[in-house]
Length: 341
Figure 1 (cartoon, rainbow, N blue to C red):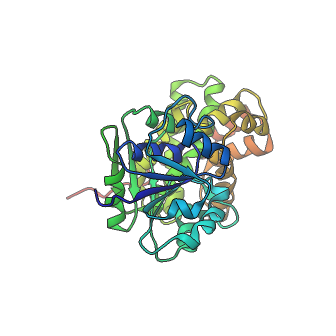
Figure 2: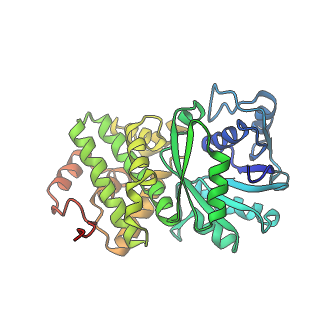
Figure 3: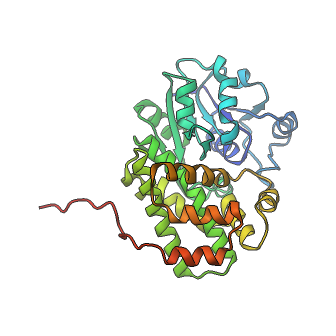
């Protein structure tokens, strides 16, 4: 193992806790920062996080604390698992205790309002010169903690960081692939949350398998079209962080964004759907920001446009679907590699 220093995890939600548990299960000490003293006490004394992972016993090697300096001391690898709306403020809180040797990895799939900043961009802005990476893929937290076979992607332009994360996280049920397309991997994990809402909504309305297949395929086309405009590599979207994450989040009721969409399809308001979830569904805000950005850039995204009208303007779902089916038919595959001679 490259380092026996403690791994730091900032965030006490489902995925931050899963990362802490996975690492600690390998015998590596983990210091996990949580805002809530009540949740800190629960984890340290009962080895549970009942709010986000009810019923699961967590590894003994996790030590929770609400003192961010204490958590970062004697660590090298830091996973930042904070909801997007709080991400920058927590990074600023941690900034005085970040040293040059720290490697920072975001696991958050979201966009910051106003600046359309992804989490790796926030890390770069707040902590210039640090080694920064992104972890993303088809990684439903409750399946990872149950030790279902899972794969993910660590993306960074820093070779040492990629290798370190692969060594720290790899185990018999969790495989870590590497990528240098940080922006593409992160954007894929962020954009798919939008389409998970659409998928849940269509499932609640009783749509068939043909519809599901069409929805996911056209979602992938929209994601890659938008990503190319933002400077990402479209080939990244054929991997785990693109189509892989899209499939799982559009197919599983464990997906928070899928559950929001399903509630909308049952006739609940957006406020009711989010309240019933009780957790952050990043796709709701992401939908708003991507709609605004696609309008600004002139990117054709009919699914985003239609879903926005349903979610935020209360447009009748059937009418939106009908208008989308009558819209201009474009090419099936937009990014085609040249044929070899």
